[in-house]
Amino acid sequence: MAKLAALTGTAIAATGAAHFVTPKTFEPISAAAFPQDTAAWIKRNGATEVAIGLGLLSRRTRKLATVGLLAYAGFLGSRIAANKSR
Image (tube, rainbow, N blue to C red):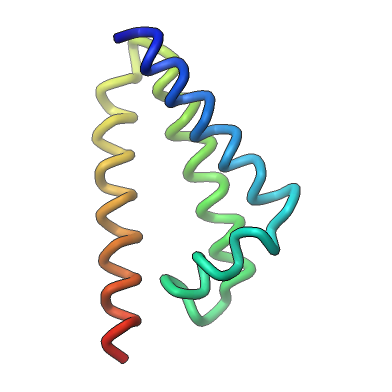
């Protein structure tokens, strides 16, 4: 379980960091959820993913980071769904 959490945390943190290195890569996905101020949301999402990923790496913060990951996924999904209906 610890290896899976470490692998998942590293992948999520790396993806979050990539938001800052290659923000254009995340523009189509972010625009679907956040059509206004997409560039700022790319950075916010990147920072959130870095924090969640790093949280998954430590056993002390893993449960909280898992709750954060689920909440974050739900938030993004709800934003995409809300903007599709517009």
